[in-house]
Length: 320
Image 1 (cartoon, helix red, strand yellow):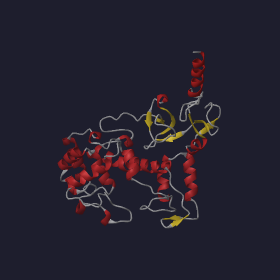
Image 2 (tube, rainbow, N blue to C red; image 1 turned 30 degrees about the vertical axis):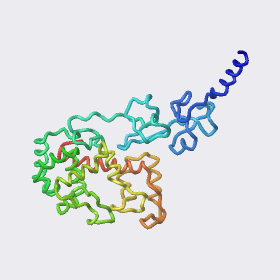
Image 3 (cartoon, one colour; image 1 turned 60 degrees about the horizontal axis):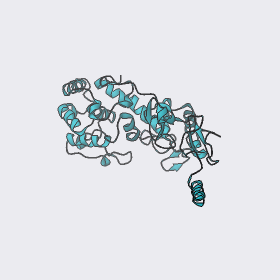
Image 4 (cartoon, helix red, strand yellow; image 1 turned 120 degrees about the horizontal axis):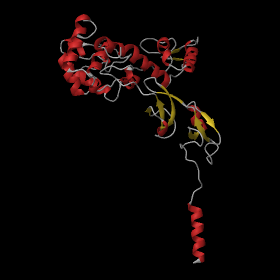
């Protein structure tokens, strides 16, 4: 019996692990996360020693990590149970419970919101009845006949009903077409630039068999995004590099004066230097600097707030 007790004690010694702080766990005495110092640096955080006891030397407390939501709201990375605002995934290091915490968007009133990026792409994103929708668009069509395609102006009931069946915001169907210049137009029943590329020309654009098919195609494309900010971060692409000087078709430095207000001061300074270079970046090569997620978010925010948002305001009184 005595010898068996010794064996039990020895067994327990071997199976009870040493108390290591878990990687991606909470820091001791700070609000940060225990990650490798290289990871912390890549996210722009600050590393603090002695807050992740017993972890390897290259694992320290990473704190003071800034982050930006897709709609441009600034925040900080923290654990979910510490955040009282909106929690955004994919912006911070660590596990799924360490997220970007930003201030909540104001609650929309009717179909309006002070932040156009928060408007839902889904049918429920519009609070207008069928009659109200038809009335508002019809009034705008009569006053501005060239700004909304006649095929839609003449078939507003179809636009609303098809949007409902495709679960896409009917206001977005109209506003996005206006932002795209209703291109490529009636010949393809495609008013939203679906399938069109900067290099492919009109031939690359998708041809639909009818207005209904076109709306369904548009709805299918945007259904993967929950709101305008998410949609525009993919729909509107600033390009892989900071082309210098760039062009309206390929993106680049030509857009910088318009989007810099939606960037952090540090990124503004960096891109100012990039766009001020005498050496150029073109589509065929040169002195090219990659764009970042912050650049893309700034571009998408500009598209929503200063292009798409105003169209929704003009026709529907939304986000004015």
